[in-house]
Image (cartoon, rainbow, N blue to C red; front, side, top):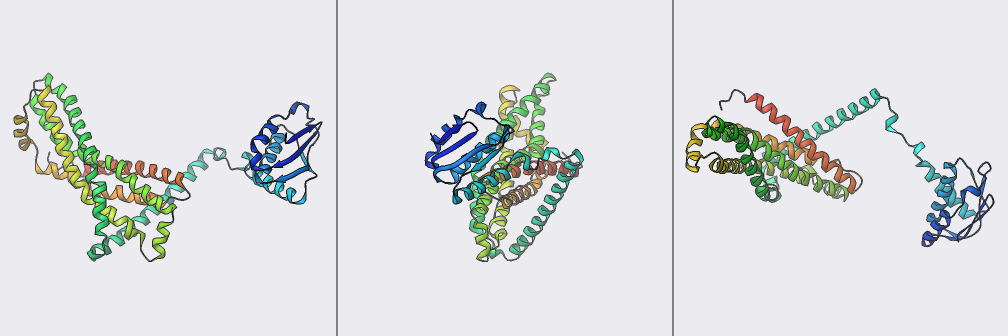
Length: 371
């Protein structure tokens, strides 16, 4: 045993080091607290210690904390000079992280908590717009000097953020087309208006749902990847290294990703339009008795170019929102891997939130555009 209990005295013996941790734990667990007179100070005697490191001092600190939890007091005696210094140091550090010594946010009154959150939101909004301004300046500079754009990096981002997303975007929009046709077709079928499923699919998907769903998928897939990539670079100090060698991180990391998404998202939306209409066509043929040829012949009659353009006009704005939000949250990473995951989650939530708000604004602006 590493600890001997004698009345109100706990005698520490031997080597209290990390190598003896299992034995130390068993010795502490074997303490009979009922035999201690907690009305008097409990003596912790270190005269028999032969070796002590920070691990042993920590376990000694747990004994002191256990006594405090039982409303008792500890008196450290007979420690050698170097051992006493180490024990005092570790005890101070452990006391600094006592729950009572930490600020408890729940203790803030309601209006104080609201005020703090409002101030934090204002500060974050200011920083985000400042980031947008910096990116805008760098982007205009690159567009004025096209040779300064990282074309290879940009096309690589088009590949990863656009081409590799075709399957998931096509599949989900195909299924959404089926669902919309099935839900709406059930009502149309009751009135013998099966043919109007063409209008339902063409207008709702091309004008609204396909661009929105594509942007949401890209925000969850590509936006999170952008935030995680930049966040990892921040943790590894690669962003600081770029600045040290004279390369603007916005020029190297943000602009190529933003331009790549601006290029890729409209094409992804067109692909989503085709897949969603095809899904509706399959359902209409099997459930509503609207043949493929009839469906295809009716599409030009009910769908105008304006309907397609209204849906496509949103996509560059969606791309800018997703890329800037992902990059901004990536640059906000601090600390370690936990911060990377946290900021990545925030980037996805904020991107989807802003995309839906932007889509609602577009719907109001384009309300007078003929369907």
